[in-house]
Structure formats: structure tokens, C-alpha cells
Image (cartoon, rainbow, N blue to C red; front, side, top):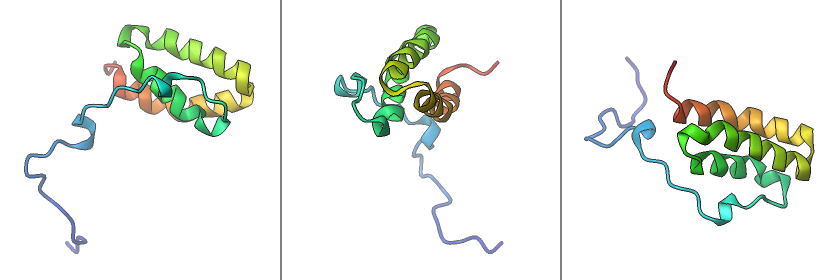
Length: 93
């Protein structure tokens, strides 16, 4: 099959989607001063929110980020973060 050398058996290790996500630190939940850290902050806010509050947490993060960084930077960050974070947290339809 001409497969490159690699690990093909996990020896019981969990796959990356089964590894528990770490809870964000209190520092990670503080709105950053630099727009380069905006995506990481949004991820932290979403991961800290209980599943039943994830949409309100997203709306709050959007509002706070827009106040500090403007709508354009906020929308770019949200578009990059939301698909992965929501898919990881919400049950499939």
C-alpha cells in the first residue's frame, strides 16, 4: 500500500477527539489587549461555559470583543473559532 512509516495502532491511547479538554485558566478568560490573542480568548470563554449557556457566552464574547477590537476583527475570529468549538461541544442534530 506504500504507506509512510508511522504508528498504525494506538496501543489503547485515546484518539485526539476523546482526550478531555483542559479548563481555561482565569487569565485566559480575561479579554486580551492584543487582537492576536482574540481567538484564544473566545475559545477559553466557550470552553468555560456550560453547554446550555454556550450561545449566551458566544453573544457576550462577541459584544465584548466588538467593543475592544471592532466588528471586522471580531467576526473574523468568531468565524474561525465557532465551527470547531460548537461542533466539539454540542450534540449532533
